[in-house]
Image (cartoon, rainbow, N blue to C red):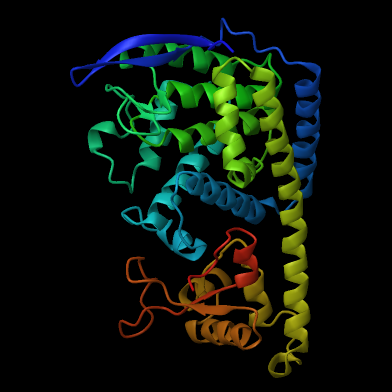
Length: 392
C-alpha cells in the first residue's frame, strides 16, 4: 500500500524525523466503490428515519442526543464523568474537572450544530471558536486555545521518533486547512462520505495542539446537520466508542489511500447512530409511560389528579436532567415548598433518586439558610444517555 501523501523531513529538538503531509482533497480521488456507496445510502436512510422519530417536541430529545454524543466523544479521548456531574458542570464555565471537560465538549458541539443550521460557509474562524469553547475548562496553555498550532504535533507514542503519526509541519497547515474547508463547504460528495473523509483528513492534519479528535467529531456533526437539514445530528460518537479499534484502524487505512474501506466502516457507524437515535426516542417514551404507571399505583398519590404537581414535574424531564425545588418552582410557577413536596413524592414512588454532587462539582443554588438545594434525578433516564449515571 502507498501512502496518500508525502513524508517530509523535520528536525525536532536537534534530531531528524519525518512528518506526514496528506494529499490535498482537491487532488485525491474520493470516488467510492459500489459497496461503500451502498452503505452510504443505507446510512442516509437511517439518519432520515432517526430525524423523523424525534417528533414535534424534539428539543428535549435533541438535548439528550447531544449529551450522548459529547459524552461518547470525550470518552474516546479517555475523559469520562458521571452524567449528573456533567449536567451540573454545564452551568459552571470554570469547572476544571473531568465533568467540566465533557461539558465543554458539549458546548463546542452545540456551537457546531448551531452554525450548521445557518447559511454561512464554515471558515477557519469558526473552527477556532469551537476549539476555544472546547478548551474553556482544560489545563491547555492559553496560547494554544482557539489557535492553529505553531509547533510540531504527533499522535500516539512519545515525541516524533516513535509516534503513531507525526502530523504535518506548521508551515503546511494553511494550505491543508483551506483545502479541507473548501471540501466541507462543497455539496458534490454524498453527505455521509463527505463527513467520513473530512473527519479523517482533519485528524491527519491535526491543526490544534490539543482536542483534535473532539473537534473532528464536532465537524462530523456539523456536516451531517448541514447537509441533511437536521434539527439534531445522530450520536455518531456513540457508535465510534463501541469500536475504537476499528475507528483507529480505519483512519490508518484512509491514510494509505483506502478511501472506500474507511467510508464503508464510517457509514456503518452512521447507520448505527441513526438506529440508536430511533431507539432512544422509543426508550424515553417507555420510561415516561412507566413513570405514569408507577405514580398512579403508588399508594400515597393514588388519588392525585392528572394535573397534580408531581405529574407536572415529570414533564420537565428529559429537558431538565437534574431537578431541585428552586428549579421546579421557577419552571412550574410553584412555591418552593410545593416543589419540594412534589420531588419528595416522586422520590418516595421510586421515580426520582436523591443525588449529592461531589465537592469538586458546583452545588446548586442555596435552599434556605445556606443549605444547598436537594437534587433529584431519574436513574432510568440518565442510563439512556451515559453508561454510569450515578457514581457508586
